Length: 535
Image (cartoon, rainbow, N blue to C red; front, side, top):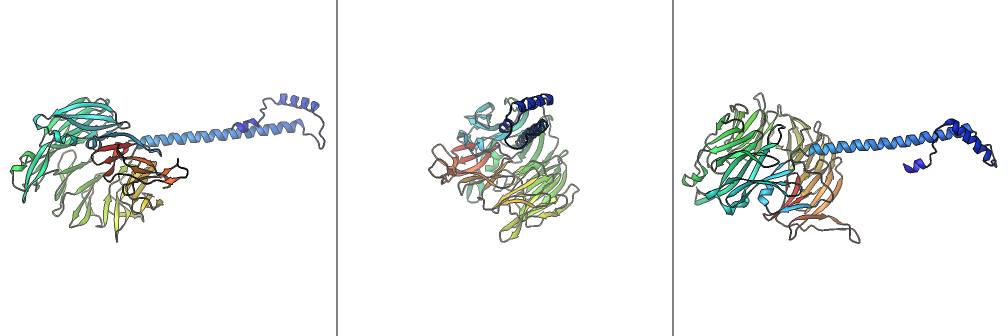
């Protein structure tokens, strides 16, 4: 811009310019050939140059303003995606280890809550709830929540865990419900030819201020009841046979399980539900999932759908040949999936009570990240034989196939109105409305796929590398190699730029390495020794 301005003579007053031209004409020597331009012509030329300069400046300002708008939009988009579960913090080519921890069980099971990781720790007989900063690993707060006393099993202190759910609403200070659990022993369960050991745990439910860790209320569940935190309280499950008594009952002794939806505002549960007898009363006997309309309870051979508000039974699925089924809820429609004699089956139960069976070749995919930009999206991987499969969209209203794509994917994400798929066939972006492939990148390393909304990241432990591709077009962005060492796992550039010639380096990752997300950061875990959080 400065070079263009240097060539411009500013004309502020036409009369002054004419006088200046006359003086200049008198002083200037006569031209050797041709006739000299008049004052009016020179004024017109200067005015033209001034207009051109204004246009250049205006264009530069417009480009700059447009870029500022685009940058602002991108910052807004990144900030919005930061609140989407499963989306990582923005990833950079200089990705490196932010911090390390030897609290493997606690860190890898911690709940991300805004900029915190909330976890449980055990020191002797004391179980505590703690929070660390996601970006640095620095402690933020720690509060003792339960004295295990004689129940304490210090040999299992590393197994302490916590699950949390932020409370609904915008009340300040922000609060959350957490369930902290510690292992307090083991029980010998009778079985053919001997016994088997089953861990005995004890849990406490806590209502906690998010920023300070102040405990507002708590309920000690003892060793008999387990719980899952919800946005307004918790769901408690209690077997009819206390776990500590399982060692004295007959092999495969059946029991029932009572399910309660509890809130902090109600002294009593608004409703309870009791399952049918479940054979072999050991371990996690039931699983639950809920939305605003439906509360689903699943156990071996059975799925029951309850009204979320009243707890009344609205439908039941009898699945005698199946282990525990999985249930996914989409706007009041329940997708119940299970294995029946080796075949995968799914039935949709819609809001009007109708049931629709999906083709036996269709297996539903649960997006690892979904920003809600495509309401009612139900995606399946449909087998086409010989080990091949492709993506298809299912109408949750009646189970019909809306479209089938040529893309083969086993992992999907939904961001900004685009379906992102990944699998052995590579990476792809698909229009969720039509199934049209927007771009396809083949030959990518097979592995777990993560995203920050800007990049798709493939992490291949077999290849020992991390590769980043742009979400917009699938083009490669950068690559890193996994490394190991005395300090634990880490990453290094795939290409050594400091060498006399660019050389591709080899990964040195340990064999017992695995990858996970810790909060909104990628993390490398080396067995039970150390966690390296990347950023």
